Length: 111
View 1 (tube, one colour):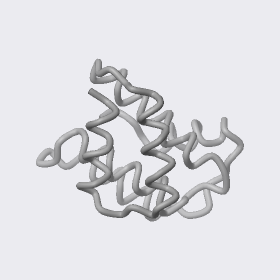
View 2 (cartoon, rainbow, N blue to C red):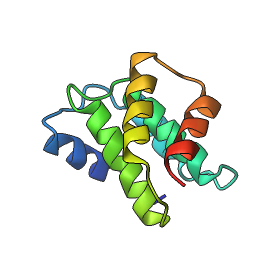
View 3 (cartoon, rainbow, N blue to C red):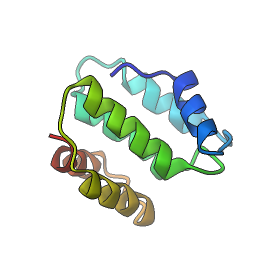
């Protein structure tokens, strides 16, 4: 997955947010370089850091959706947008931290 911290910060700024804490985001971005992890798992780490740890003052769910759609575009995957929005909202609302559960939800929405 080709996305960096600066790009994520730029995306979130477009949604009116500001960075509050970047430690979780840095951890997730570090996972992107792990060649042993699959692409969906890497995305799951990134979304968990955005949706559960709330690194931004505003626009966390919108940023997660944009990153997910970028992922789908990069890997030429189809997206069930309604299901993706449902999963993003559910992950944030229910504070889902289990990477496998997040990954499963992503695989259902992005095929």
